[in-house]
Length: 326
Ligand code: XMP
Image 1 (cartoon, rainbow, N blue to C red):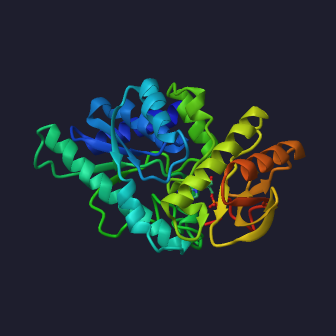
Image 2 (image 1 turned 90 degrees about the vertical axis):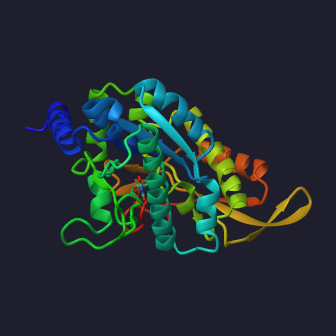
Image 3 (image 1 turned 90 degrees about the horizontal axis):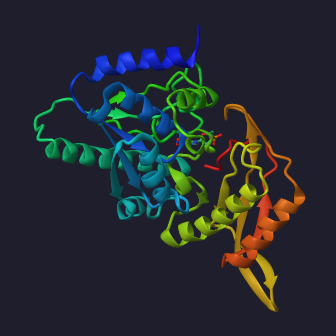
């Protein structure tokens, strides 16, 4: 029978057998999945695990600090933070195609993990360790939607599945591969993770890189970060964090429309709000959220974020739309 205790016990035994006395690293993204995967592996192999947080510059406001503080405080894991903003932005320069972006981000993640692994092994004085283990918080829906399930088309390459390069040298440890999000949350609770981590809304590993329709640049990221922070703040104030599964905020960087502000003409970008309700992200419906909250978010974003003169609401369910725009 399926219980979280069984899942934890079974995975802990499997991971111990797989890793033995070697070292493993775990990519932390700040999201629920990687946090639960990390906690599970830590339970199995303790200090043989080092978590690696890659700051790719595609994070939302405050995210890096939150991982550095909250996650370490909750779990006591060893954490290595890699500043890789320059590297990711350089690799993404000039790229607008969504799948290409996902592949590039997936590849750069692995290259950074490889470097981090080599450093960790060197620091531990364990030169020549032959197997490198990488823990990922891959869930069942990630596998299915990346085309890994039987008879399914590739909808999009999730950064930790279909977005991986072919020449990867890591052995993957994916203890959540058979689970859905709600089950992962239960496992996280079982492992004693606090609600702030376990109940977090999903956020994709490729971050804001797949929420800018068009090329990803530092200026556009800053703009989107500002708009996203306003939306999140107002949704939290309105008490909607639990009701809404997640609310991607998307910048249509290649679209401009005419507006008027003060007594002048503007020609700025639209921001899309995509609040959705869902059970497992395989299907979703757009959230019928209060108009006054939408109005507040719209007013604030257009007033406070330069170059944005329009806020639009995405009223598409999944299917036919996916949750993210890319
Ligand atoms: P879609 O857009 O496919 O998203 O309807 C379903 C859920 O998955 C998240 N998502 C990702 N998560 N890496 C992740 O860790 C990815 O590459 C990725 N792409 C989408 C998305 O935010 C939603 O919760």
